Amino acid sequence: MSPRTILAVAGLAFGWTLRLAPAAAFLSLLFVLDGALRWLGLLGIVPLFLALRADTLRCGPRGCRIGEGRAPGHWPAP
Image 1 (tube, rainbow, N blue to C red):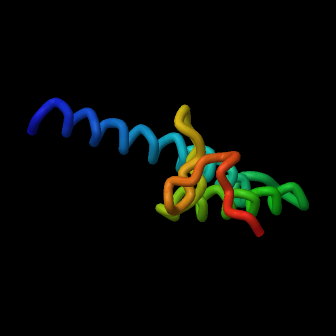
Image 2: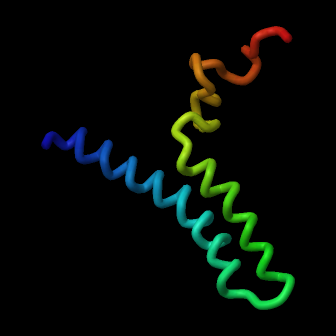
């Protein structure tokens, strides 16, 4: 494997970890907490869903990539 490929795989794994860790933490509250507070764990479903979808909003230094490479300020007219 070339270093660029290894770096790409490491970056992908790091990105998945950053997206899935908060989702797992919130979802685990459903099983850890008692009483009415346990239902806060259902909030973990939303970040888990967004982490597993490949076409969700991703913003970075070059703007937000939604579909056709549109950036903020260049949205199509309604």
